[in-house]
Length: 299
Image 1 (cartoon, rainbow, N blue to C red):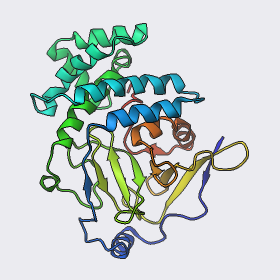
Image 2: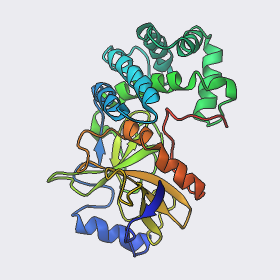
Image 3: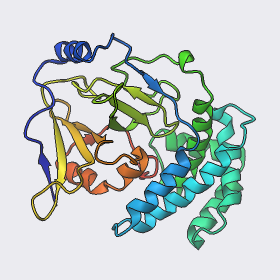
Image 4: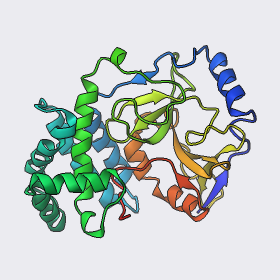
C-alpha cells in the first residue's frame, strides 16, 4: 500500500482570508456555528464496542481491536454509574471499577490491570503524569490502555453532564474546550444543519467542536493543506471513510473521517483501524496532531 494525495488541495487561500470566506459561505459568525459544540453521551462506549468488533473482522489488528472493544464494554457499564468526585480524581475510582468488570482478559493483560488497580495513590498519580505528558516508560506500556480507559470514562461522564452554554469554544480552537485534550480526528458531518462542517473530536472526553476546514489545525496555514489516503493494490482508495489532512507548511497531519461513507464510524475506533495510514505518513516524516489514547508508546 502507498499513501496518495487527492487531486486538489483543500484551500488555495491564506488562512485569514480562507477562514473568513469559509465561515461566511457557511453562514457562520466567528466563534459560532450551527452547533459549535457537541457534548458526548455515555452511550458512546457501547457504540464504540460494536464498531470495533465490526472493524476487527478480517483486520490485521483484529485482536487489538477486540481487546479495546472489551474495554469499551466495561467503560459503558462504569460510565452509567454516578461520579462522586471531579474527573481529575474520579478516574482512579473508575479504574478500579473497570478492573472489577474485566475479569476475562488474557493472562498478561489481566495481571497488568490487577497490579495497576492495586497501586497506591502516589504511584497512580506518577503514572498518570507520565501518560499525560507523553513520557511513558517501557514498564508503563502494559498499564497504558487501562489508564486511558479510566480517564475516558471519568471525563466523558463529566462532559455528558455539562450544560453546553457553560462551555466556550471558537472555530479555530485546537484543543478540547472541556478537558484540554488534543483531537484524535476530525469528522466531516452530514445533514441539513452541519453538512460539510468539520468537527474535531477529543480522544479523552469525546467532546466535539467545530473547526473551520480551510486551515491546518496545527499551524493555521491554508495554502499547503491537502488530503492523503491509503492506496490499495488495485490503485484505488483503500478506505473511503478515512483520509489524512496533511500540511506541508508545518509537516503535520490529522485524520479526517467521512460520516457520509461510514455513518456508524467512531473517531477513536476508526482511527485505530487505520494505523497503516499513520505508518505511511510517518515514513514521509509527517507529525501527527494529537494521539489515540490506545496507541501509547514509550517516550
